[in-house]
Length: 213
Image (cartoon, rainbow, N blue to C red; front, side, top):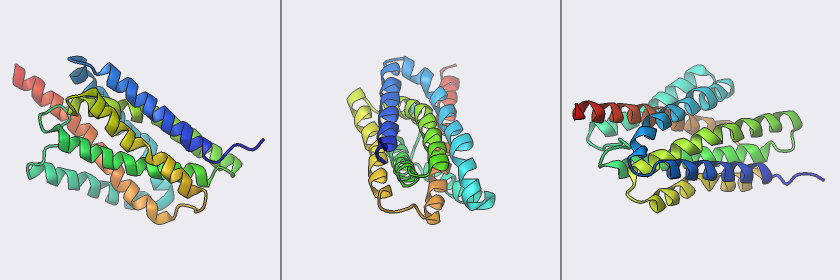
């Protein structure tokens, strides 16, 4: 029996949501701040070792770095102008919005690519396996950082669903259309925002710890 092409996107969505809920559950009370730097490292790792190498093979290293730097630079400019994005500070709402938008776009492209290549035995299996593997650290990081930025776990869970459900929407599109090369460029921008948000989470926790001494 042939597997349904929406099977991989659905599995990726469930894996990311379950991992995110685990991150939210582990982030209760004082433990949240301790997990934020770990989640920041996971987010950076997903971008540097999962997303960016694939983009470099698809569109070239300099295009990937250029568009990734633009995403990083855009959030850095917003932060410089006073739009705080620190997940462990009182202005976490702005941070949550940035992370949800970037993750939702990334998830949409994940679903699109998985469904569009599902019929290609070798390539489709490789793509699906890579996406499923990175959904675990991505979900853990997302859940932990959203929980640190929201006062209630239910709010964090709602944002988690908003960020990951687009995987299914991308899968539906992938049933009818192959993703174009142009899509990799905004995906590189999203990768740059992941790197900024992850490193900024580390800086925010370090700054808070330093202020307490």
